[in-house]
Image (cartoon, rainbow, N blue to C red; front, side, top):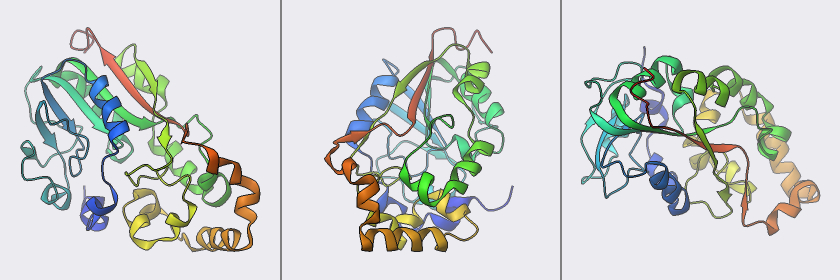
Length: 252
């Protein structure tokens, strides 16, 4: 499958991708009463609740290296071939990772197979219009996501009925994922911040969009179009937690 993307872009990742406590609380709530949880595509393990017995699957050695010393055990593997027996965990979790999987359908089936109670997935809804960064400067990111990101209906076709929970992004979000800086546009001009966002690594040439953003910030054009956002404490830009629970194992 080649070298995992995060072996290339993941150096220094944890400095920019720090878990946001408000998002973490929503993830913990989505896991319900599960006491054993498998985190699939775990990265550095940012959103693994400390009060559960955690295990992780992550293909990138660089990401595994950045896991906290007290984190649960991590296995280097891919989502579509989880090295665990059926119903090994109460729940399976995936956080902003499904668009990286070689085969998202097989990955969801595998999550459902190993979790006897619940599957919880934080993802982005590709049917949402997104926000100003992709609308005005990098529409090609949406084009890429439409090819790799399943819709909620597509996920439901694999998981069965799901509960869809909106995840508004706080204005001061501590996690620097793609939408994390929606109220801090200058952060997208920072090389380190962009380096921790996989979408930028996949762009053929981000320079034209970055130059337009830099110019719009300098001459006030960005503020004219989007300055109203500066008064917002949070913004719904399409992030969702998808929860499949009750009868997950029987549906497989």
